[in-house]
Length: 395
Image 1 (tube, rainbow, N blue to C red):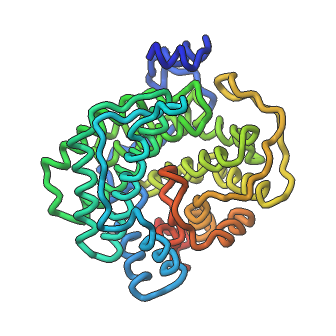
Image 2: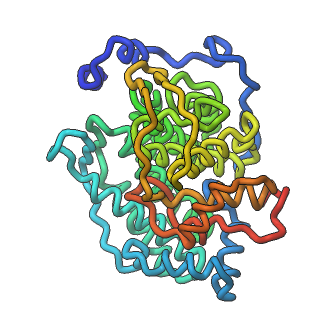
């Protein structure tokens, strides 16, 4: 903790980092609707994909229906979807912003992607070679990894951990031969190595750091049937003091994003992670997408419209830590991340709402391919395209 405080060097940040998490009733939050707690048994599989999603993908791909088939072709031909993938588990992973000091993070990122993509390939094709490969990767890392640290450990643990947990959730509930002792060891790795650097979020950093912590904490809560961990992440989404809370990341009704004055790739990283959090919430019966009159959609529309070449309003803004003031919006970037299909399908297909700019970018990217690194699930055309009769239903 002291090392991290020195690196990030800021009295305000130090105070924030030393603040003990208090019960919600003891914190001085802005007026906000009470967060939705999860008391019932969790739905499994229930992270980014439920059983109904897996059935839909399988049926659409086997029948050759578009756009699912084109999306599947993107997944199936990706190197990290191959059942011959060779995992490279590491004892010590370090992610740091200092050039040349990171170690093992590339191997972790690649194997996390491979575990998730092979799990998806198994669920869609029913080829057990992919299920066995996902298990091999998950078991190799849970048996090997002992230390995860570095100045950017929150990002490494959050981004890669999320892919690992999604793979594990799919395999655990669709392929019954993953041994119970291996599942328990994998859960232990999550709790003892991945969760500690995420547990207090990243209050000194840009909001995408908090969001990396939140999404993996929420996912581990579901996978480990840990309601307290799940609720902690949901609480932060609604009421957190850091930049990753919904109202601190999408800062106003126009949809301006906390990182809009930084650069567009990081802005898309953040809103994409918000969407992943909301999708998990939806699969567990929580409408986090709908918070504050669909605030997330406003953020997506703002980012899509601006990077498509149009003008958007911008107000000078200083973030919650006080470290990142922004006087003007950052330059446009035409390289859109593979994050738009999930949000398009929720708001337009499920809810019947208008989302013209999100729709435009989703159509431009279709079929979505792999995400950048391990940042997002990617392959959204395959994974999140819903049937035409989905409006106003849970799926």
